[in-house]
Length: 123
Image (cartoon, rainbow, N blue to C red; front, side):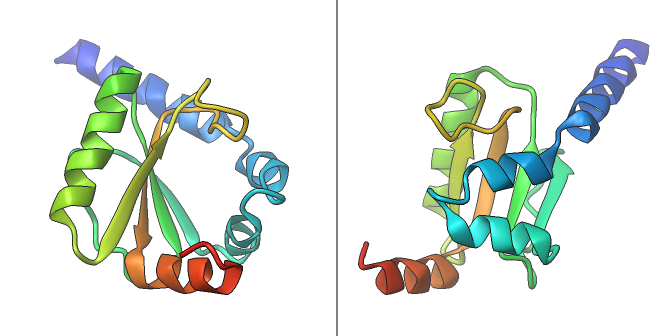
């Protein structure tokens, strides 16, 4: 039990040490809305506890987790399949040019994403 607490505390420190401002600024050409949403406090970043939270008024929620890359991708796929309100994506270090600095599951309202895609002509 003590080991689980040490691991959880290390993950929390890892998450807290991420410069999320710098990350969102670095991807603003690829995803300009995310940078603006982050600056407005509309992106909620939490530790993944195995429970999906309601998206509420957030533009996105990022669940930070420590898991193998394939597990992160599988979790996102399963959550996306079961969720009609939100779209689930994922990222992890090394997952391409705009990868997050830590592994994350990304929860976003489908309605908002569809509106953004239509505006950008990417539907």
